Image 1 (cartoon, one colour):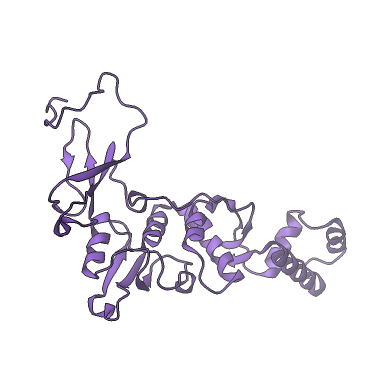
Image 2: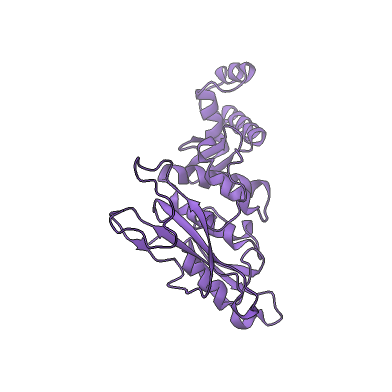
Length: 288
């Protein structure tokens, strides 16, 4: 089970939405997510009332996320955070600290998701925890200007004047580069944040993939009789020939009448000799 990153209270936008409000832990599976929406009587998770109750990631401040945000993006952010390696977590915590030092307020979820793909742009100086140590690090690494290096060379090591100058040089460097002190040392950006993530239509992007070679999104069609109309969807994970056809994530949700099937993900290539035409509605041969 994935570590809980967020717990959020969700409610519909109606005048009595609080009466059906429920809490949702993230990252959530497709079925957990949509069951919560159904209980809260929410039609669209992209536009509903919500408020964070818990944030379980070090360095991510609750104020960075705000209220009434897109639940799909929040779930994707939770997935990305749980997937980070220890090394990537170090970079992510530094990126979040830099964001918080620049602006004490909400950051767009799209930007936070992009940060999870850019943890390698951080430069970290371990064991550097204050301005004097930063100045000393720059001096020892010969990263200061020639004039500053020459002036420090003339000073007695450990003297009050050298200590004050190292603090001043460290402070100037930190301000010029937007760096921050973290629990792991001094960090600053070593490159630009690449815009990796962008909104994608459909829902499978925002939930954990099953690993199945083919994932289908099943959507009910519309009929002349309104009592049969709805916008329910379900996800089918189609296994390979050694596996089974896995039921959808909704826990056996049934559809009455015709359905539309959308192919969401397929392998890069199919094995030779396995291409078959449609069977005209017949069940496929179990030997396939």
